[in-house]
Length: 235
Image (tube, rainbow, N blue to C red; front, side, top):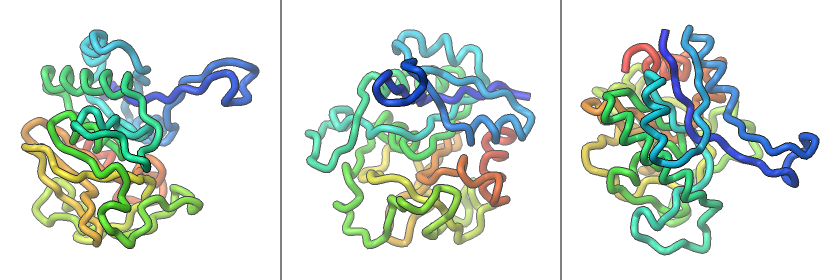
């Protein structure tokens, strides 16, 4: 049994949610459910000052970085594009510090959607501020189709840590940014048919990250459940 830290909490103020005027910090229930179902303990990590990152990592065994706002382009030396979405530099800085602390303590990291992107930026990679700049014809933001439905295929590298997904796997898709330049030491282990990177890994540093949202599909599809099992039990 392991304690799994879930970082990337989202904040809503009094005027944004009908919760009796109270401010709310929340995380995605799918992560909590998957961790509990596989016999582990989820621990939600709220955004905090970067100097507190080590304190949080001290009490968890592994770290999940979940989806959310766009990573600020200031951290990969670009000006904000007109298609850039909402950013939260305070969250970026805190998650960078969590990553450093997890590496220092040799604890595994699983990035999902934004989590993949923040890992890539942390280690010197860059992002397309909108997938339209890739020239893709694939719909990577599948709204209004619900997250529980996979909508496009990916091709998985056969000798990678994700080979249990099979050479072709169907995923859901809720992102408008993607990796442009892959950071050093990462290996791209899955791509969409348009070439967009859908998964990366660094086996030496015990990092894996995916662009889709398995927390919305693990309870319906065995292969996405196996992805959580790999992170929780093997990585």
